[in-house]
Length: 289
Picture 1 (cartoon, rainbow, N blue to C red):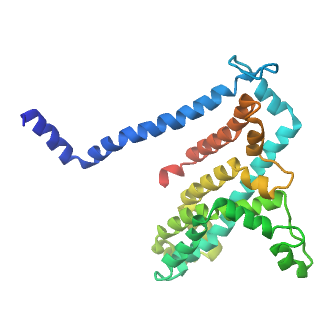
Picture 2: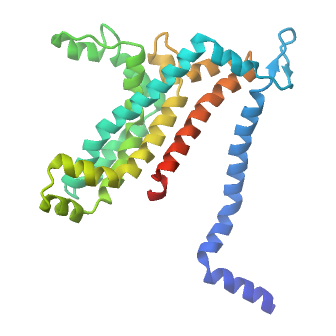
Picture 3: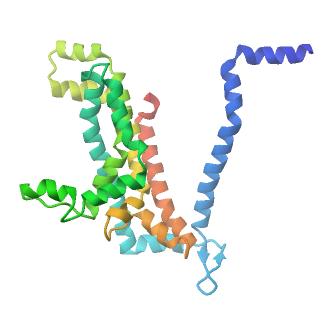
């Protein structure tokens, strides 16, 4: 073994982190190329068009696809509806996850915490389609489970439509909000809560001034999951949405006959998520995760 080879190997043994980074660099580079390459191909295709006579792709630059999306009221309504559903699902997940995660992390004993975490994770083991079809059965207007439960109260089942989509997506993505917020609560020092109480702060003041700033990065992490997953979903809308459509449904219906237009529609949620991530980054929440 030469002196140069021995020195080279000794360097890598003295720096295991660099060795691990070197081993992972090739797979990570491949994933970046595939992911960014597919997004680039999607973006480029959005500026092409389909020949109306032959049905073949015409690889010439045009803005007709985006003009059609942003000048057609039906498509603008679909964009607004999809964004509204994603925001409502994220908000509902947060409202449910905050008290539940606080109970799991700060109230429940250490003996019960693993069981509670397992109960949160259990729905993720079931098939996506099974869960959506289960909610379709529960949301059935007259004979569904919800109609049977709230009927005696004089209420009606929301049925299939906007509310049905929001309820189903909230159930599907709730674990992705609970787990990050739970992790944030577990990192919350108990001494800070005691100090807030000793200084005379009431419950709501402690929540606003101590707890919320500390768990804000975790809330942001959970919102990224719930918001982006809801924004790109289309199967739930197809099953429990009735006649309502989301952007994903438009892509599904048009990608065979008009691939460039479908690509143009697909770029809308991508751009929305990128803008959301940029806003989150400016807030500094990602740096504190």
